Amino acid sequence: MDQPPAIPRRRFVKLLAVSAAALAASPDPTRAAAPPPKRRRTATAAVPADAALRKELASEKKSVADVLKVIRAFPLPAGSPPALVFRPMKPTRGRRS
Image (tube, rainbow, N blue to C red; front, top):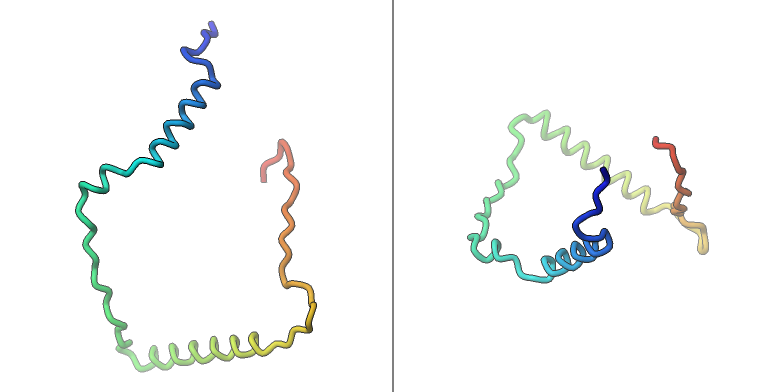
């Protein structure tokens, strides 16, 4: 029932890798023929129509600026440990979460 493949697996994988490398190295003929995409003009910043909305946006901007000011002013002693240290987890075999 099990028929051997037409070409060995290693040769197939090698052929696949070589063709992918050749495809990546060659210029894309479809890009040369296609016209450049038309750029849309971005709308200028629209002024909020409602005064309450403008007031809320100004309040949000002020609160973000205040928070950034506090974060940037926080003193860090020289040689302090970094805030985040990435440690990769060991792979677990047979369990998916």
